Amino acid sequence: MSDDEKTLNQQNHLSTGAYIVINILVFLILKLGVSANEATDSILEKFLTSATWLLVSGIFTKVINGQLSSQFKAVLVFWRIKETLPGCRAFSYFMDRDPRINSNVLQAKFGNLPSNPTEQNQLWYKIYKKHELKKSVEDAHKKFLLTRDLASLSFLGFGVLGIFGYFMFANFYTWMIYTSTLLVTFLITSQAARNYGIKLVSNVLAEESSI
Image 1 (tube, rainbow, N blue to C red):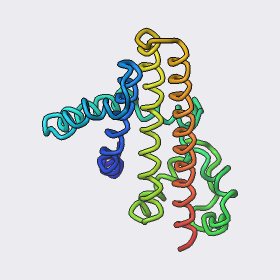
Image 2: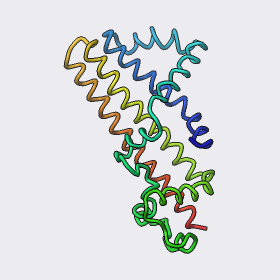
Image 3: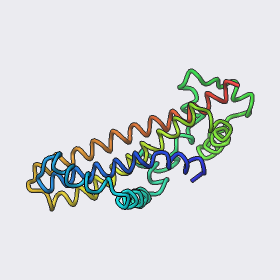
Image 4: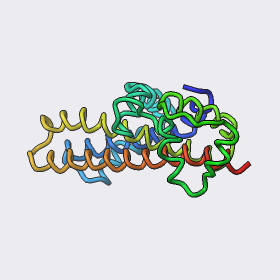
């Protein structure tokens, strides 16, 4: 993971932590059969105002989020086993699908653009490093990392909380609704991450072809 990715992940840390807390809170509401207000009073007010709890939740978030590698997270987002990242198709696919990108300018700068997926990603990343601090690039990158992590956490939640819920919830109907919601959440966050990942690739090429 590059330094810039670490920094952006740190900026997203509060959002991913809140996402984990909300998922655990929903699970406890269904398990204990209490209302949302009761769960909030008994859990959030007692623990979230505690400095110790904030420290523990921060560590817990890092541990949970670290269970999946960046490569596996990319598989979950882009639904591809090989040449997972969109940078692998930067010039053969995405370049011609964004009207902001001038392919003639890119060809003039870099000669024949690569068709090999690995070489495409390598060239795209080289260009990315020139523009990583541009607002359009940094914003898309930050949103991609956030939604990618949320999709990964949703995938873990679907597997782990879904299994626990099967054995711990009072009735099968509740479990079905709950696991279905977890699955839909994963699909939505995965799609969002995919869109932001493609936007990141396109924004980098648009920046490069405009100068």
